[in-house]
Image 1 (cartoon, rainbow, N blue to C red):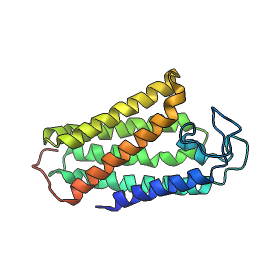
Image 2 (cartoon, one colour; image 1 turned 180 degrees about the vertical axis):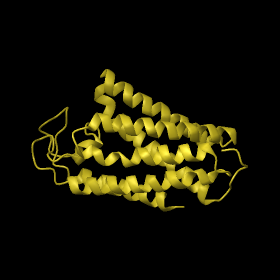
Image 3 (cartoon, one colour; image 1 turned 135 degrees about the vertical axis):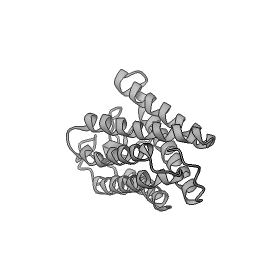
Image 4 (cartoon, rainbow, N blue to C red; image 1 turned 90 degrees about the vertical axis):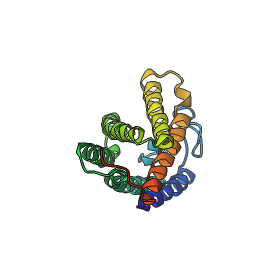
Length: 202
């Protein structure tokens, strides 16, 4: 039950390692010589070349980090319906939509970045909304509130990305969103680990 938590912690360490290896450059400063936590996006660590034109030696570490995160979240989405008693439609929606959102992420390495992000976000939002309904139903209000914050951050990310308003702040917004999402997933996994199943109704 704790493997998603361990996997997400490993992802964070690999993210930092990849950032330290990144040669530099961003949409805001092409000549930079290192990763900028203010200006660089996560996806830039996955690119073949850095934004400054150099070969991106961080890419293998970033790909491994993405694989660790995807596997961790597949396990998370498969197990998290166990937080509730019963195996009805809600459990299947959470499980299949959540896992589906992770299965498409390897396509980020192709040229279909926006399509992959939109598909993963749609499936992920479906899983999250059904999960939130049940968290509210069973009065798990801290987890419910954190999940609502995650949905709002997802909306903010998409608004800034597509509207281009406040685009300079998007890399920071992305990192804050990453942290809060991972924190929420860890809290849910810990709640599941404590084995406090609720009454049937999912």
